[in-house]
Image 1 (cartoon, chains in turn green, cyan):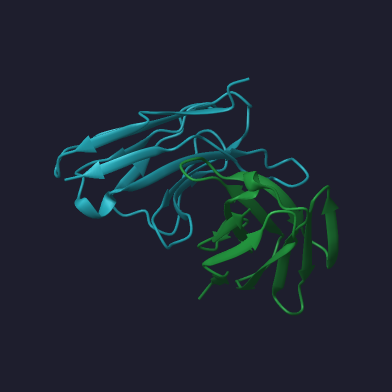
Image 2: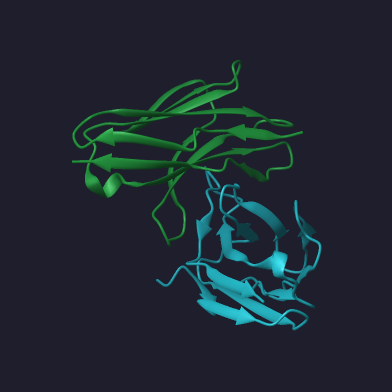
Length: 109
Length: 114
């Protein structure tokens, strides 16, 4: 079967750095996405990785290792507005997204 | 631009009744999707459409039907609602010719079936 694993919840301090991990087992791989979802709102696109390595976009970076079936999202200089759920999704061989359950990130002052 | 709109925002529905959730996008995206999101579970694909006139079944299609008469609209119909269909429903679209093909989501419909 297809499976995406992420921690259910993480807590971090404002101004700090946090790493959210995602491991996956899917039928085929055509890219990995990270989305942010604030409570009661729709998911919004954060990052995309299809090749191994690190992609940096401002305070957010995403890393991929296809051989290990592993990705992480790194958030730097945390702000209170970063409190949200972070969703990992893998595009499979049918070009459909398989979603993890999401990691709820709580930022404390 | 409006992006993707969904209606209604929320609804309480009696079991056994039918209902259509509406979804409209103005980005001229060729692909559209319907997901349900339940607490503790990832988004689950109900139905999708790669282009106008075609539809396909996702992971959890039972009890739902869709149509794609044109590029902009992708309604989801519950023929006879059951309490297990209580969920938040998100419509999404993507440009399959784009670099990332990332999906853009509507604001969601919160449905309660009693």
